[in-house]
Each structure stands twice: as structure tokens, then as C-alpha cells.
Amino acid sequence: MKNKQLKLILVSTPIGYLGSGKGGGVELTIISLVKGLIFLGHKIILIAPKGSKLPFESELLEIRLIDGIDQPSWQHQKRTDPILIPSKSVLPSLWEDVIDIADQSDAVINFAYDWLPLWLTKTKVIKIFHLISMGDESIIMREIINEISQLFPLQLAFHTKIQSKDYSLKTDPTIVGNGFDMENYFFNENVNGPLGWAGRIAPEKGLEDAVKVANSLDEKLLVWGLKEDIEYASKIENSFKKEIIEWRGFLPTNEFQEQLGQCRALINTPKWNEAYGNVIVEAMACGVPVIAYDLGGPGELIQDGFNGFLVKPNDIEGLIKATKSISEIKRNNCRNWFEKNATNKVFAERVESWVNKGLNKKSLQTFKIN
Ligand code: HBI
Image (cartoon, rainbow, N blue to C red):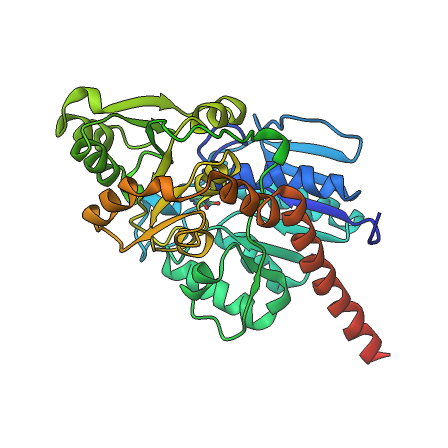
């Protein structure tokens, strides 16, 4: 093992158990990172809501399940909303468990986009590293993230630079990207497949734009993802000829990647500052080029003309034009980009160096005091 073994506590999102799909991209991030950190030889304690399960076991992994009511999602609250902690909330219970066992660990990594764990950092009771999983969705979250950035700059990380720019931080935060288990994705060289779209079915994901592209090319669109906003989904369906959308549902990774790999392109249409864009990397891992609005994470992951095309946000004509030229993209470029930048091993190495830098800073401080 390259570096000293770390004992790390990873704390999951409180908006649904791991495997429910309610945590969106964070679920995949946590599962991939745990596997990557274990591959590097580190000891992991994962604290997550009851019902959480991982698709693998390891003697280096302990999972602690905590009961409680889901936290309301910031994606469905207003920017000006106060912090809401429902009674019997799982959020404080998760962090009470962390506090109970924190002395057995070198560091804690928080994946929740919530005020409580960020505020806890200020008490210095435990050393918490935060991987922020969204753009700026709430005023009170923006304030506490800015505070932590000033007080504990080495303990804050984002998936992409463009996501971190949302917060106009005074100090440059650590950017760790994201990563997915290479063994779960198989390269598919088929260039004549259908068009695909994947993500939580909700307004901020802009599915209607991709359907307009399929409609104008008079072909179907395969759609994967949790139907989070039912009336949004049916509103789209009712404004087009029924047969355009082929709903494939929220599938486990192995089935999802097998189907996704058959597409000649994935169309990605974020209407918000997407922090990263997991599905974009999953598509590339299968050799599927991505056509995406140049907004948020996708704008940083896609190299226009190399592993996909970037289009001005909301430019449907631009999406259609790019779709017609997608055969210019070599599918190998997509897979190679993934192997170099976004496997869970590469991601785990970036997280490992982020945490080590933060921990060494502490020893540096004690050294100074002595
Ligand atoms: N809302 N309160 C809260 N906490 C989270 O951790 C959270 C969320 N909304 C969405 C979300 N996490 C994830 O789906 C995204 O960060 C990807």
C-alpha cells in the first residue's frame, strides 16, 4: 500500500437509504468511493440510513445503519427556506453515531448537502471533510459552506471547479471529480443504436428538450431514471406522440450500463448547475458519446469534438445538429477518457490525497505550537 492506512468514517446522505435512488448521484459516488478506498487498503466505517446496502462486502468495511425520518431534499425546497429537521429525523442520529465513534478514526467524510454536519465542523469535536454534491441551492447552505471554506479550507471539496464557482469562495477548494467502478461498465462499439437520456425525472433535468430532439428526428428516446416528479413526466408524455419515450426505469448499474451502451449518443439537458453529471461518465465508460448543454459539470467533463459535443444551454437546434454529427466522435475516446479520469481508483486516490493534506495540516499546526 502506497500511503499509511487511514481509518475513515463516511457518512451518507439523509434523504433516503443507499440503493433507494432518492440520493441521486451521491449514492453512486459513495458506493464507488468505498470500493476505491478499500482497494487502496484503507479501513472504512460507513454510517447510513437503515435499509442502505452496498453491492459488495469486505473485511475492511463496517456498515452502521441508523433509523430515522428522511431529511427533506434541498432540490424541492426554496433557496430562502430555513433548515428543517423533522421529528425523529435520521440526520442528527447519523451524526450522534459519528460523534460516538469518531475517536477510532483518522477523519470523517460527509456526503450530505446539509447544514448540521457543516456546522459541526466549527465545534472541532471531530475533523470532518465535506464533499459538496450540489451547486448553490440554498442561502443558508451557501453561508455555512462559505464559512467552512474560510475556517477549514482544506476540509472542503467539490466534484468540479464550475460547481465550486457557484459559491464564490475566497479560497480555491479541492476538486476531486468523481469515479465509477471500471469493472461495472463494458465498452460497446455499436455506432447505430438509439438515442438515450438518463437522470432523475424532474424539471431541473430538462428531459423535455431531449424528447424534442428525438421527435424532430422522428425516432424514439430511451429514458432511464427514477420518476421523481410524476406529473412532470406525464406532462412531457402527453405533449408528444406516445411512442417517443421508452421508459426504462431506475435500473441497477449492471443492467443500466448494458442498455446504455447500446445507444449511439446520450443527450444531457441540465436546467440547473449540475455539480458533476454521473450519467455522462457512465455513458463514456460504455463508449457512448455525450451531447450536453454547456452548463455545470458536463461543461467540464466533455471535451467538445473529442468525447462528445457541448451545446449552448436550451439550444434545441444545437442538440439536433450535434446528434446528426455524433458519428464524428470515436467511441474509444470516450472509454479512454473514463479510464484516465473517472474510475473509482483514480477518484479514491484524489480523495486520499485530499484527506492526507487536511490531516498533515493538523500535524503541521501542532508542530508549530511545539
Ligand atoms: N438534500 N437535504 C438534502 N441533503 C442531501 O444530502 C441531498 C439533498 N438533495 C439532493 C441530494 N442530496 C443529492 O441527490 C444530490 O446531491 C446529488
